Length: 219
Image (cartoon, rainbow, N blue to C red):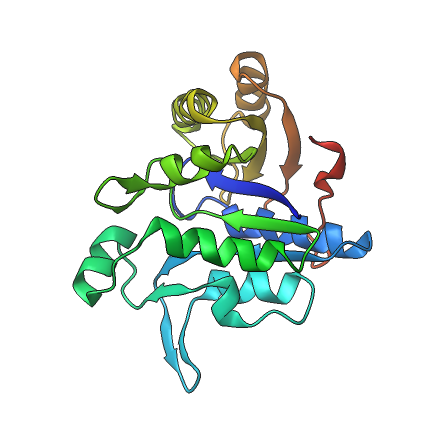
């Protein structure tokens, strides 16, 4: 059975996909069969092949070839709004069983499944279901992406504590967003001192095209 790592963030547009793709590229370069899983995506364009989400397509390109788009992103919604609202408007319920089935199918064929959430840790998916509950039910280790900008210290500490209350937080990644955060070094030092888990990587604002991360020694 594949190893699974869940990637979440302190907010939306914070670097989850960027980091998840770096993990996939690192694993593939190391000879592992690695696939991304974006179970729910809102914000998609209509194409001849159907709705396509940019983040899911990036995961598909970064991982091991041979997995269909629909396997990587089984639930896709056109409007870029909260997933539970998009699903309700589309009349397509998000059910835990469908999320689980998609993961099981990928895990049966891969060494690693990198699961990317939407938004932050407690983003709702349906009545009585959010990412936190789904991930914690599987006890998947989780990686927190912190977008380095004003307000990130509070967001990071709250998110880290929430994740730790539910499952295992293996660490966090500092994603340096443009424009450069004033006193970046000071903010990194503050988080290093206060976060309940270690900083595992720092991502530059403009990484090279072959930017990679290898999570095999992280947990």
